[in-house]
Length: 413
Ligand code: ZN
Image (cartoon, rainbow, N blue to C red; front, side):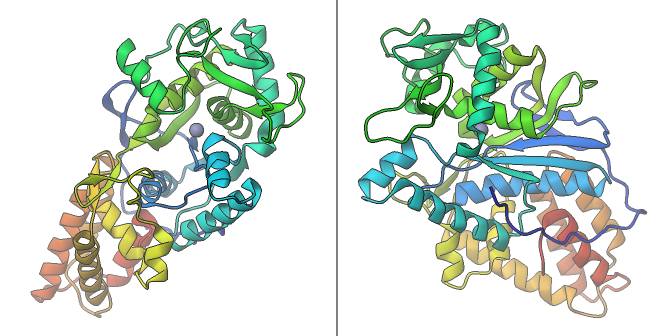
């Protein structure tokens, strides 16, 4: 799948010191330091292309863009892979509801997503992989799981035995009742007759009438969602056999912790014998004006609607970074206004020939980001610097600060 254009990232002077990056790992429920490495492998779950790109999507991809930028600034190589679920039930349901061809709908939304990612200055993935193009990989992965005794048939569909992974549940920490509830809310089928365990997950859905299907050794059909990510991540991130984990970071919104990330991780572990990811990192949900933002409420705010109405994408970027990535937070007109005002003040001070000292500001921003991406602290540091510059303090290098904000935060001002 075609990705989107590369983003220019200025280099940062070597006098600035980069502490190891600490992130909250949902699996250990602790803030953990990522070990220093030359190569990091990061997999971020992509969208299903029927409704792109709302503020929740934008916040997620921005979070992992900050991770990517920080690790690159430490001179490490970041292998970043993202998928796009270009065949799945929600896409077919939306296409049917709107009487459009599902492929036409998917293509239009993928195009929109690429253009939104470009305007938000998100570094593109090295490999951007669709579910349809990964069907061969999924079929191979199912074979590996079958050899491990983890696959069974219900009518013509294939299921993964979740308890074939002794660590099942260790990434999401839910009680059985919570897991059952969330599983059925998020596309699972706990009540299907013939399943050995209610939480077992679908890996291959045989072709249904009036739905697309692809030939495979399992008959004509289409892949399940969790195995799609497992297969794509392991094929395109090429795990290092010397590392105890297959990849370093599995990322996505917090609504993916269960069942999606738990299932993909279990499938990876059963098929390879190794733990999937060193860290499971999740960004919070974005609501609107005090309410949950959701398709069913019809209150989604889209990046493209805002940018088409003339909103600077950098103001969207700033607004979403003003609070910590892990916090469930609200989008509002007032937040956007605050962000626009902040950007105007910042741009004005950065365009002066004289400004308050910048060295400590840049180092403090680096330190704040290293501390679980503490962007609230970053904004507090910048507000302080703006005040000092407005008060007439001098000795800083506005160009260097401007470039550092671009490098670390993706803010082109
Ligand atoms: Zn995924």
